[in-house]
Length: 75
Image (cartoon, rainbow, N blue to C red; front, side, top):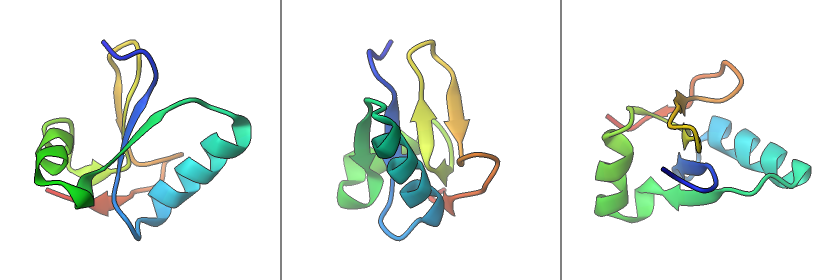
């Protein structure tokens, strides 16, 4: 179980940028993991979904995309 949300992102993904901007503005604590910078993190992200942003919440829920918007395909 995670203590703060983990967000998998890639550079150039509009949905990722929107999520990060909103959460930063609201003071939401989270850990960003850039899937485009590491094969290990990319594989980790793919184990949870195939569209970033992928959010892993403290209660075990996983969400793909942001506010109903589809992000970028990483599958």
